[in-house]
Length: 353
Image 1 (spheres, one colour):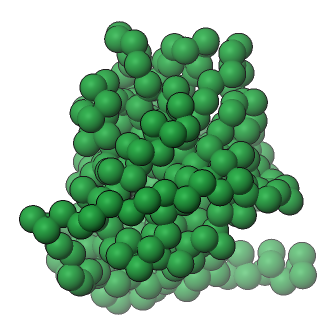
Image 2 (tube, one colour):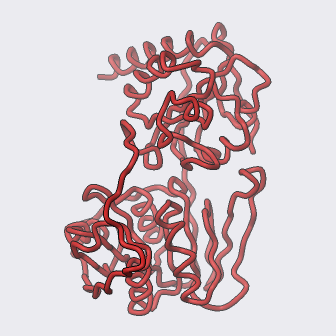
Image 3 (cartoon, helix red, strand yellow):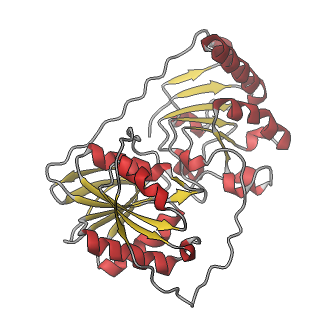
């Protein structure tokens, strides 16, 4: 973990800071054959999938993708634009709802046809469901929730947060066989897309597993940007004190085009939907900027946001644990700080317009 490099008291803020982000790439000595399991939502490929394709392309790897769903054939060109040379496509009305057994069959078939030496999933709910089943069928191990990895010939060294993010494990595969891993969203940058025509291989759709039939998906709706794909995330803790505080912060999130999340305590109180929960038992995010307002910094919450590139924290307690991982901190009352931040950002936006 990192110590807070700059802790500001509101009355001492005198100038603006310019933030510069860098991203280091990884190099590979030998070309590996990568198969990326893509994910989409509302006819768009999810950002974590584009991150994986971009990273594989940057490393110069031979990359393919498997695409499953209903009416998703148009997304194959998107995958090709980000580096997938071949797209193994299963497009059928019966695949509109996620089906663990059917999706597993299709991915297993794609692995066989592609001759992949590595299989990459996003560290999402879908990835957590499918990855262990695929690994078991292939008779190999798997590494989940990877935040960084390197490849040398066929060997992978992967870093994986453990114990609620208190330690980072360095993992390797001990046995031969295909390497299976899931990578946390936000770990790598999305590169530019290039015009490309997808080489599509149509996959056969297996019969439904009648032991488990998905008839309907009832999802808890959350407003705004998907937290797992947001570049900026604004999150609140119990320091907001109630729904009035939630609404006080909302204009700041909207102004920044940010995902709006919360700690488990806020969601348990019913101030925000549980779909907005960030933490060990909630969503894991890795935005470029994470703004923590009224959040003490319990280990369980840090586990869900420790991968953020830059963290700004606001808390009345100068000894709050959140400051131990923050890059910038403001010791103060969020009910006073947030309106000032919102107005200052508006002024900056107006000046640069």
